[in-house]
Length: 283
Image (cartoon, rainbow, N blue to C red; front, side, top):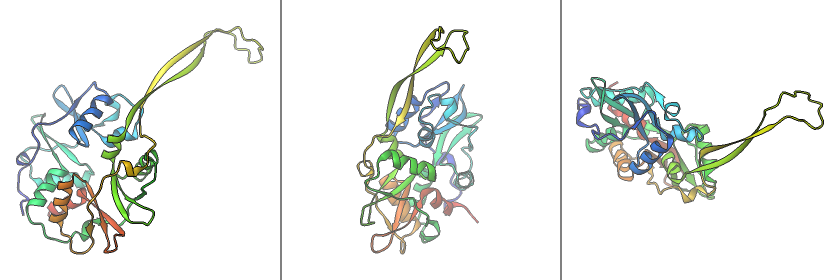
């Protein structure tokens, strides 16, 4: 097994990153144009945080990058092994590790990079140990804002989509929600008293009132059914599927999760790439 491959041989060297001070708009554009799920945040050449799609969706009105990001992220050395990378990702529940050398960002390694190693190296063990039976699925007519709330409350990044016959018809991910989202600006008004008369029983107050207008910008999901934003997803069978096969399907289709079905096309569970990479960790 290729567990001693070094991170520097797998990592992405041309890293998309954001800087502080920065804005939500900057990050949103990077995620949409690069089709990625998160970026390191850099200040004065040093990695100070990570910001992800989930951070944006959970904080739709926050614009400041310094508040949105997760501070002091877990990092890794370019000379560490992929087994160490897989262990760090699994233990800390993260999908990406900035690669840092002498305090400077030199690359990034992600779950997807590890998935490529698995796909190419004949891991032929059964997928069964990596299947999560607890699945948050949605009906294909469910409005996108409701889907977003369901996924946020359930703390999941993808949901299989079922039709009225309970057949699997697709999958929707947080990446799809970001792609469908729009930034909406609204104008709000607040009245501020400028006078000193504090008599609550005054019929006609002589106080001056200032009207303060301010704008709120928020990420909004359009009121469309989820079937218009979902993607077709290949499914894997509970019996017979092996780890490398599943990894290849995920890589080929750009999916972080795959539905697991029975022979009757009934949803049985879901397999996540973050669980699959556990096969790289020596017990």
